[in-house]
Length: 157
Image (cartoon, rainbow, N blue to C red):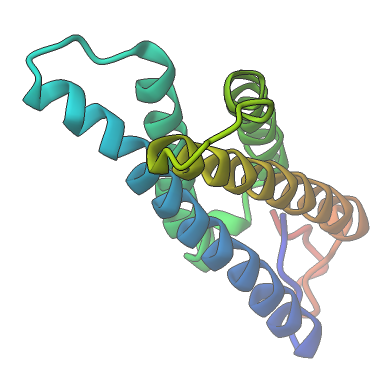
């Protein structure tokens, strides 16, 4: 992705930075919500269920990606949107696994089930957020892929 000079690139950078900040915040939220279960298993000397580990790893990857993508140089990579789509697909998997487990559960006063039902909705928000980020990055890339430097007429990559 190439950033052209001027106001357009500033608006684009602000737009993408805002989306990545939200992705970072919701990724941390997922790490906290599922980390509670991992910590509980650790304290009980039980194995860590792979579903919860997967959710925390995807949350961590989202956070790391969000931090890296706030660096302007990183946003210039032409196929950044591919990684965004991969994260979207991973969030689809997380949402699918936990929605199947918890959406039809009746908490009946059980705060753990209530927390996990809330976590499922945060997974959905993450999934949709990474879809918006991926589609926006793809659209930006298609719009600016032939951008040329003002001074040398060379392609900006």
